[in-house]
Image (tube, rainbow, N blue to C red; front, side):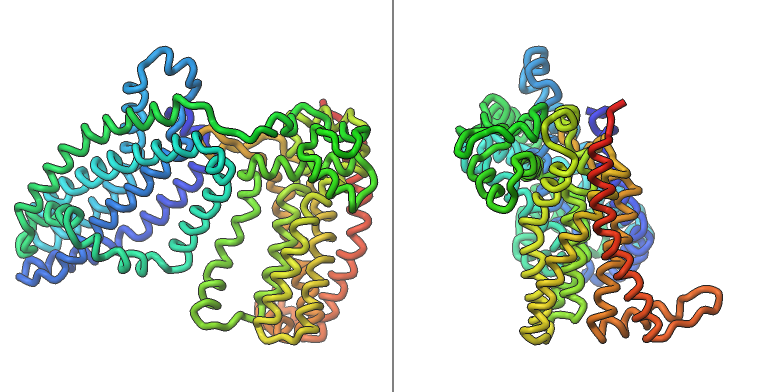
Length: 547
């Protein structure tokens, strides 16, 4: 299990960022807790309710993380056939429960430890630390003992239901968006306030009594503190037993799949193998309906095969699209502000256009060779030419992404006060930008491919574009959209000028007219670069050799 954790690049990076965020607020938390301790020592029990609310909120957080761990990859076993033969399920399930509880010790013990240390410093006595540490341990043990088996039970329910198995990617996406919406759009205080009746009532309020029972002036209930300890003592063995039963429910079952899953694209199959298939027959590219639909917009079967394989791969392995969803975090405040004020900012259509072009390029073309994985040798030796590979990869993302970007950009333009004609213009420009951006992404991705994957979770890997491709394409996309905005939108032009003019080096100056000339030059260069990028991508794929 330790080796699995060490191998997870993305997870460890997120842990590091989370740790830095926690360390940044620890001094603030210590000062606030110190003030509360001094207030409590003076006989004013007002801060006690806040401390109790924070402790209860911590219990809910650990509970939610336990559920996610059980449903996700931390409810899985390495080599289950071998492990379940060597050891009984109770040993494996108990070890996983213990591992997940220990994994959250730093995220619970450090902030609460610092907080109760500040409380003790303000009160002038170490006694608050005793109750605080006891409450922290009880919080972690009881919440994980409840959450983890619930997560395993949900995993078993999903595996036994064909309907839930098909909806699993959608449900995961909804949960992820909801999490980031709460955390990045400032909804966490509102969520805690909405849950406050539950958080302030028993049995969660008893954890607050346990945390403050040794703090003078907090008026904590000794009965509530004893009840919290008693429930923790009961929850530990009951949770362990429930974990074993839930693990057996989740592990000893065959995952439900669609009857047509046997026709999924094989990683070793040739994407161009459908070139000789007749319409209506089952091919390695997946659903015949998908192939027939793509055949309406392109004539070459090699292009259809590559496009269908790319789309099916994205559906079957949606983690690959995770890297294209990261910028959405920056859009959450904008969406929240629009919902709160009822107005859409003037830059919203440009953001939709930029994100549409960037996400479409990152989704597949920016690593069109590396995304093939084990199927790359079959692709290079198949009847699909380099031109068909580029066409199919670009078609697979432009077909779904360009209309969405056009609708969002046009709707944002109309909602921000633009006329109907301006909205139509934004929509049309978005179609062009997304298509051109995908061609540029294909050239950049073919020039800087990446084949080694990163571990996103314990048992799932994804192959993101290379750092060079990411950086170069992001710069090109930003320049293209910014140039279009400067040339067509007066407000956008003034905003960009106000941002650039004071920051130019070497005493350079730039007028608004000069900015327009620069934007026109950038636009001309990028437009001219699209056909050149197309030729480069085709030649790169056609001439690529595996060493």
